[in-house]
Image (cartoon, rainbow, N blue to C red; front, side, top):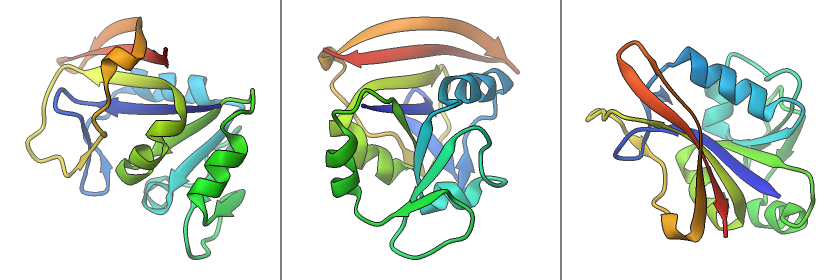
Length: 157
């Protein structure tokens, strides 16, 4: 089964200038705790934005060219998605925007840190999705550096 994990603003802002819009320590901790021990799938640009391989997880990169470092490189997203969509194993999609858009139809769960703010300079956005197709569960609310946020899990009905 596929799950998506992301931090988004009120207008679905996801990234800017090749990185995250907001840096919230509690969100980073939530990301690490949620994805630890699982396979994580990302696009090439997300891989290149990381400081290196994320430990304790199998790092899978979708890319049409070879790159150094990940555990696995896949070049056929649809084939990978169809092969793994019915597995009991939870596989996390961690970005970026295009990869989220492509995996959204396959994702059973969306773990979203909903940041109660906007950023007009964002250049990457999380895809729109029909919230009525999901059961919403607020896992935790918090604030950091004058930013209010909620950890929310959307489970496909």
